Length: 441
Ligand SMILES: C[S@@+](CC[C@H](N)C(=O)[O-])C[C@H]1O[C@@H](n2cnc3c(N)ncnc32)[C@H](O)[C@@H]1O
Image (cartoon, rainbow, N blue to C red; front, top):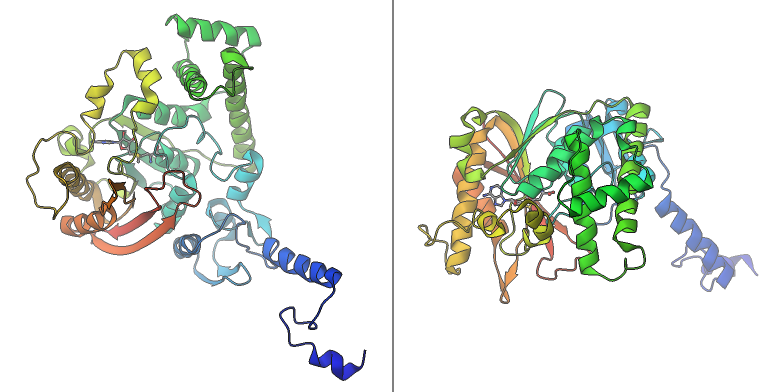
């Protein structure tokens, strides 16, 4: 082909010529694809970064972890200065730092999941949030060993577990006995020794039958509770689908126990390879609205709060744990009655044109934010993760109300990040927002 003709055809999409052959397209595509999947650089984006929110979260993390940085979103790389070994152990949105795998990447490579690492996947507690978001916020807030975090809606303990893995102490409070049991377990399991998990197939079959007879006990309370939680999860999984019928309940119980044992072994492997020190968490069953009375020593005690209140009527939190509550003989109605927005019968304040049940929820949400302000040290940071639910086709503006309540309580509003929930099954919730505020010193 004449040279000038070739030149003419160069101004095209592919930067080559006007009508590339099929093979040329494939070759060019694979180069583009490679550039996207394997960016060139020392500090590269995690492949799990999908949305603008991820970019904002990366930016927040870098503010807390580095001396200086520059994000190049097109090439999916970061330039930065700081303590690279520390950043590598901490950061949640980079796959490599100085060409070496980050600890977070190691977790997801070993567990094969971006969220179900360590003991985060112990039990499918409803409304559980993403450990990566907690990790990001701990980094963004510059929290280190010696700092103390609070989650007053700790649920199954995502905040407290992730804080422990990062070597930061924390306190978790939740109204539900099941949440408390799970959060305590996540705190205790990393301290077991390998032979605590030594159970034969026959042992496990015996255990399941003694749980059924309600005669199951074990000298090690952590093991006792672990078996119970695995049992509740097994029975619940059976009740939901016939998929497991062939395995049988015993088969599924054994499978779930083996999975938890593997989670333990992988965690110990990472702990040793990375020289990690896990911090302890204190877990309490309690009501965020009674925090001043029941925990007066919590006044201005915490460096940061990372939490997610129940979203207005979006999820039947307690219903999921029916099997556990029946086993313990706990009246679920009594627990539900203590839920945010369920205690009073008539709202006192004015919250615009919302149904009175929503107003009651807002009243409690406001009071809980005031209590969080009370518990935070001056200069402390707070992140609240909330979502707007849609009730009878009407949007309940919880996100904006939460921001307003934060400002009314005395917080300085800093940032709101909207995180779309891609592929969420519950269409009423399109995404959630992270509201970040500070208490002035
Ligand atoms: C969105 S969930 C939090 C889940 C948690 N982030 C996790 O990862 O498991 C909200 C939690 O608030 C708790 N809760 C509701 N009302 C409460 C209250 N008055 N005091 C303390 N906790 C409450 C619920 O039991 C539920 O676990």
